[in-house]
Each structure stands twice: as structure tokens, then as C-alpha cells.
Amino acid sequence: MTTTGESDTAARTGPWWWERRRSAVLDVGLGLASAAECGVEGVQFADDAGIPVAVGVGFGVLAGSALVLRRRWPIAVVLISVAITPARMGILMAIVGLYTLAASELPRRIIGALAGMSLAGTLIVTFVRTNQDMANGDLTIGEGFIPFIAISTSLGVTAPPVLLGLYVGARRRLMESLRERADSLERELQLLAERAEERAEWARGEERTRIARDMHDVVAHRVSLMVVHAAALQAVARKDPEKAVKNAALVGDMGRQALTELRQMLGVLRAGDTPPKPAPAPAPVPLAAVGEAADRAAPRAEPAAGSTAPDLPEGPCLAELDELVDQSRAAGMAVDLSVEGDTRGYAADVEETAYRVVQEALTNVHKHAAGAKTYVRLAHRAAEIAMQVENGPPPEAGPAEVLLPSGGNGLVGMKERVTALGGVFVSGPTDAGGFKVSAVLPASAGQ
Image (cartoon, rainbow, N blue to C red; front, side, top):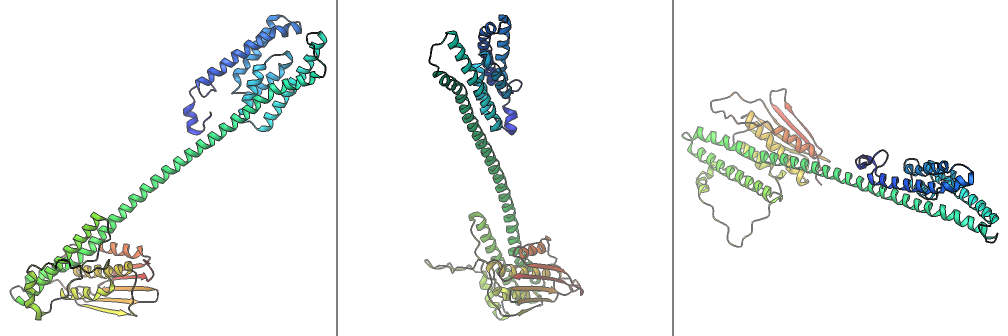
């Protein structure tokens, strides 16, 4: 069985042209047997030709030993067997040579031509020798049997090895084809496994990025507002107790909601489920309800047994934009919200992304331009929804200015969210010294 490619080089363990040592041993054994046969037949050949016996035997041994080359030069072996057929030599060489020739990768026309030559040579020699034996009295049969003997002998010597060689060669090529196909499938499976591993690694990276982005969006805004309210609480604690109580209540509510959102996010990481939407942020507490703020610190009553909490949406939506803006206003920011076009529903991904863009932009204003006038614009268009958050130049820093840390990933996260839905995101400073964030999302995204 032959092999191809890298396995062919690895399979060659025999000397010279043999692939395996057992092949070399087999060919050498056949060569010795053929040399012995031709050497014995060389005695009769020397007697018929009138030459010394030693010459006839030596000629037979030399010609018979050519069978050792059957794998290397099968054509030469068959031609030698045809050439020594008139000397009544090389029956074993002819049979093995024809088998090797038919099983080789040579074209069929060459195999057919050489098999025809061997058949014709054997037929002619058998016919002539039979006539000579009948003339000498060595064979007594009817003359009508001479063609039958010649044809049957030539076919018996030629047809079986050729047919067997063709069958073995076809089977060998089929096995090689199946082996190559199996190797190809194995390589393809290996490539698919590598690609699957790459896709899994890419998916893990994307999931880590998404989780980091969601954690940033969920926590940064509320924590920033908590810091602002805490600073205001510290500033007015003695001057305006009512306002201090209001700010303390807001800080508590925002902290509880931030913890709730974090707990839900961590629950998703453990269970692999889609995170439910956190409870909506509390509206700013009016001054008239300052007396009720103290009650917020008291332990909350547990729901009655058997009661079921209402199902929450999967994420924030544009309907909560007013509450988001009110939270920033309660923190002391001058925010103007304007909505253009007819309000309508969008896919959950679109509404959440639009909400997060506005949320992150307001958070950046709290961090980098506290006290600056801010404009939030939302436009409902035929095939898209556009949003823009623009703030003016920040006022000069006062004694109560709050410095908030920044990780530098807010704008990157907003751009990733928008571009993932096929939208356009633009951000940068304005000519007036402020900063502007604009995003346009296709209305059909996420559906």
C-alpha cells in the first residue's frame, strides 16, 4: 500500500527504492526464485541453441534476477520476460511482472500494449513449440488441439495476473483516496476546532467588554450623583438642615438602587440569564416632603407571603429619560430636555442604547463640567432616532467644587454601543468651550 505526502516520507523504512524492508525481502526472494527457474531452464536452452551449458545457465540466472527490479522498472521486467519467452524461460517472471505492471500507476494503454505483447509472444512460442514436439514425436495429439493449447496457455499465463493487478491497483488507489480524504477531513476538523476556539475566545472577550461596559453605565452615573449630593450635603449640613435631609435621602435611594443593579448584574454572571431591569430611580424629593425623608432610613416591610413582584422590562427605555434628567437637576445641574417628532416604541436594544448614551453624557458633565448649562435633545425621525447632549463651558471652580475620577472609557463605551447597532457616534469640544455628544441609531436595529 503506497502513501502520499508527509506520510510517504515517514513510511520509507526500506533500502533504495523500497518503501518497507519486507517489500525488499519479498522482491529479493522472488528474484532468487526466478533466477533459479531460468537457470534450470537455461540447460535446455543451451542444448537447443548449441551453446555451452554454463553460458545458458548464466544467461538464465541473469535474466531471471531482473525480477528484483519489478517495483522500480516494471516495464523493463515485462520486456525481458517477453524477450526470453522463445527460450522457454521466465514463466514466474512473466506472471509476477504482468501483475506488477497492471497494479502500477502507469497509463492503461501502456499496460494493455505490454500485456498484448506478452500474450502474442506466449501464443506464438507455444504454437511453434507444440508443432515441433508433434513433429519430433514427443507429443501425440490431434492437430486441431494445437490452437486450443496455444490460446489457453497464453491466456492462462497473461490474463489472471493482469486482471488481479488491475483489481489490486484500483483497490490501492481507492484506499489512498479514502486515506487522503480522511486526512483532509481531519485537517478540516482541526481547522474548525481552532476557529471555534478562536470564536469562543472572541466571544469571551466581547462578553467581558460588554459586562465592563454595562457595569460602567450602571454604576458610574449613580455613584457620580451620590458624590455630588454628598458634597452638597457636607456644604449645607449646618446652614440648611432641610436641604441636607433631602440630599441624604437622595444619596440613600441612589445607593440602594446602585447596589440592586450590581446584585442583578452579578446574578447574571452566575446564572447566565438576561439581567432584569433594575427598579426605576427615585424622583427628587420635594422640599414639602422633607419630613418623610427620615422614614426612608427605617427598615422596609417585607412583601406579604404569596405576593408576586411585577415583571420588569429587560433594560432602561426612553420613557425613563425624564426621570434621568430630573436626577441630574436634583444634583444641581441646569438641564434642558427637548423632544422632537412623534414618540413611538423601538426595539429594546435601541431604547437601552439611547438611554445609556444620554446617561453617560450627563455623567461626564457631572465629572468634567459641573454646573454647566446642559441641553439634551431627542429627535424621533422616520427611520432613525437621534440624540444629542451638549453642555456649555464649565463655570470657574469654586470652593465647593467636586472632583470626580474618570476612567476614560465612557466615550469608548458609548461609541461601541452605537456602532454595534449600525449607528453613528460623534463627540468633541464645541466652539463655545463646551462639549457635545451626538448619536444616531437606525430605528430598525435590534429587530
